[in-house]
Every structure is written in C-alpha cells, then in structure tokens.
Length: 503
Image (cartoon, rainbow, N blue to C red; front, side, top):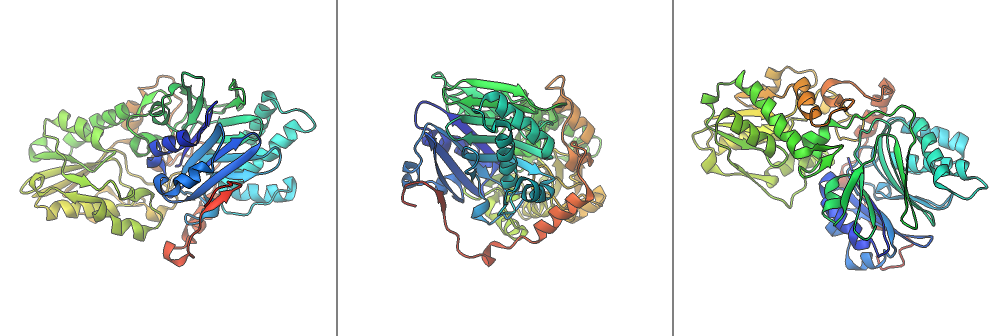
C-alpha cells in the first residue's frame, strides 16, 4: 500500500499536497515525494523518510505551481531502500508525464521485456511504477499521435493500459501542459476518491480523510476501471475505460490499512471494524466463557473499534493497557524482519495496573507473521497477567498477497500450513480466537449493497484478477529474498528534478 494525492487549483499547491500527505502518512513511511507543475515545467523533490523529514522549507520553495501530486511510499515491489525507486516517476516523452501509483503489478516482469523489445522503452529500476508510467506514456503517444491531446484520446489510452497491465493499481498522473489524470484498476482493489473545495479546486486521493482534512468535500469514489481527467481550466471529465469492471475492494484496507475516519467505496472503515468486533465476539463466546475474562484490552491502534464492540457484546470492561510511542513507525510496514523484531518494545509499553492478577483478552486487528503477537503476549505476562487470551479481528492470514500488501511469501506467514493450536503455541497465548472469513465478508459487505465482493486473497487464497501464476509468486519471492539490509547500503542522498532550489 501507498498513499497518493493529486490536486489542480488556481493557487500554489505545495503546502496543500504536504498537508494531504501528512493525513496519508499511515499508508507509507519509507519515502515521500511531491511534484508540482508550473506551465509545462515539472519540479520534484523526493527522498526516503517521513513527510516531515523529507520536506524542509527550502524544498517547499522549490515546488512552485498550481498543479501537483504526491506520494508516501510503502514498498511491495522493487528495492525498499532505493531512493531511485521512490515515487513520483517521470518520463519526458510524450508531453512530459509524472506519475504516482498505489498497488502492485503482477505482470511487471513480462511487461519490462515487452516495453524494451516492442515499445522501445528502457526500464532502469525494479519498480513496477516505472513499468506502469512507461506503458501509459506509450499508449498516450499511440492515442494522440499527430493530433491534439483530448480527453477522449486520454481515455482511449487508459483503456489500452487496462488491457496490458495486470494486478492492482490506483494511479494519479500529471501530463505537462494538459492536466491531471487519475484511474483505478478494473477490480477496484486499491482505493481512490475525489472531491472539490468551494473555489472549484479538485483533489484526488487514496482516502477520503485527505480530502476532508484539507477543506474538500468528497464527491465520490472512482469506479473500478474509471478514469478521471481534470484539464488546466479545472473542468472534470470522467469515463469508464474497462470492459467488464467489478467492485472488489481490498478487505485488508478495512481490517488494518485505512484510517478509521475514512469512507471507502461507501463503507465506513470505523463501522466495518465495529461489525468485525461483533462477529468476533460470537466466535469468542463459543470458545471461552466470558466469565473467564476480566478485561478486554486492544493492541493499538487499528483494533480499538473491534475491541470496544467485542467488550460491549460480552459485557466486560474495555481498558487501554498499552501505551503507544507515536514516534516509532508501524512495525508492519518496516522493511526487514530484523528491524521489525527490535522495534516492538520501543513502540508499546504495558500499564501494569491493567494486567496484574487478571485474565486478559488482547484484541488485535490481524496476525500476520506472529512475531509481534508473541512478544506482546509475553509483555502482558511480564506485566502480571494471570492468563492471556488473544483474539484477531481478522481471519488467519494463510496466503501471500500480490496486490500491494507486504506479505508476499508463504514462509513469513504464521498461519500458513499451521493449525490454530500450533499458532497458539508459537505465540504463547492461553487461547487464540480468530475471525471467521465468511462472517467478516458478510458484515462488512452489508454496509455497501450491490458490492461484487472483496479482494481477500490473504485470507481465502482466491486471487480476484484470476491471472496470478506460480511464476509470479516465484519472481516476487526471489526479489524479496534479494533485498539488502539497510546497513549494507551506501549513504543515501536526496533526489530532485529541475527543482531550481537548494537541496
């Protein structure tokens, strides 16, 4: 997952994009980048790190213009430590295109060969975003050759892009001198929405919270396969560009990734998590008598709504037993397992008063690798808990994800090939309760009538695009194993494109 935003305005947009990226920081903490456009000239600054660290006053001064886009990166393909693979990406022909992308292309490797041999385009990194921008650039060149570029030609190009690329993608791109383009994959896996401010300013973003937090009113989500083009005059054009689109949003967005105050595809993330807590309570009651539980404690932060609803349902007190250090990154999106292991106790600290002598039910949003859960259970015991039960608001994560979430190899998943009892023993809990996958789909799906389904491959093993091969898994696994540890890399430097400012 990544967080992306684009805006077209009559006023400078650098501060606006910065503010929106802060609201999307939870979607990626590895790198950040902003591109603005003044006339036909692009200005870029991107680097590894959090938004507040990447952009200083001198960098912001070097980002003039009334059109721009930005991204916070969470790497799922390519090199997690390479600044060259930080977004946005830029190509100078045709027109000059800058692009940010949230998702993962499952056929990127095959497309690289096709781009070189057929399209005569060179790919210089391992990033699938560079593949995507070159496919889009080629199709725009084909659609607009010898003709003025119009929305109809842009939408024609997007339609061809849909036919060539596979996987999940939400895309925002700037076309120099023409405007801002956004489009979503035909399955609607990754989220994308847009809205407007009172002065007609238009923003496109991964989550509605980025719009609301910057003074925009949510218009709607882009439909699966739909493209949106905003010309330099601020006129919005939309068109469905896919042949058989279906809406299958990523279930993990509702489980963990998205902010609870966002609304995605008409579904309140907060309400979805409350509903998960309700069904988890039903599973719990059939496993452990509520009389054996003294207190319900969430593992911050995504699990709080589910834990509150569960506690209410079983009639037990809800307490905050862990204090989170907000200045340590989310362990799930940290590259490198060694980094993840050593950061858990820096991130959470137990309040002994809530644990001592009690039978405690810990509620987490999900259990992926199990290493964090194991350490948290141990922390609860060290804080004096009599018994420690663990409940997961999500079902067992048994399968790799190939659509933009950092769980691509089976070996890293604690639930793959293990029984619930084996997982319980590894984690060290006195009991382990998981959400039911069908119940989860039902209670979240009922919030959006007419939904085709969910992309829930990490839970049910069904890859909604129907085109994921054994070779795709092998390529991703080999790439992941080849990732260097950060200490093995040379000192990093910041990148800029035609910024005209002091870096």
